[in-house]
Amino acid sequence: MEGVTALVSFTLWVAALATLLILPPGLAVAYALARWDGPGKGVVETLLTLPLVLPPTAVGLVLLELLGRNGPLGRVLDAWGVEVVFTPKAVVLASAVMAFPLLVRSARSGFEEVDPRLVAVARTLGASRTRAFFRVTLPLAWRGVLVGALLAFSRALGEFGATVLVAGNIPGRTQTLSLAIFQRTQLGRDAEALRLAGVAALLAFVAVFATEAVTRRRGRRVRA
Image (tube, rainbow, N blue to C red; front, side, top):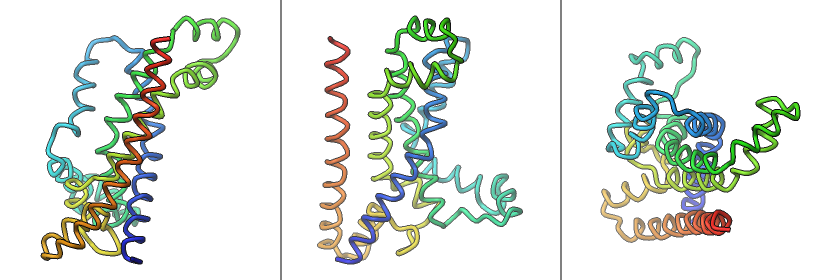
């Protein structure tokens, strides 16, 4: 039981930290996409969506090549004495990369629902662009942002493919619930794997239920 508790705690910690890590850049990108209609927007949106449609192992391989000792980012980090690959940092990073598109897509929808005229009024009353964002845009788009954060958290909870390549499957160090299920199955310990799968299903249910609850409230507000 103690091992399961540690796995759940680590998995929740990874998912929460990954979500918090992508929140500032995710909101910035989502807001920019919601307000920008210039050339190349479709290309940018497609690039941001790629982690959702590519095999997660392909994303993990790219991260490994970038962050490994011989990779461009890996050499910089090594010079600073920072190790990422096969550490808990890599688990968080892989989860963040895989969850990022979900946050951006939902938050962008929330920002698109905000009437630009309200922001313009705030600007004419002397509010700076930043102040208008935090006082007008973000409060009106909060449901879309919250749904995006919950979806990102849910995706990070079940991340496997990218994580196993860039972080490995090291018990007590980089092993999350999904990686533990895989390991138990490989070892023929199906009963343990099923118990862990039940725990993972319960966590996923809670996260998705919360997402659906916010989405339903958001839908009722839009229709009203």
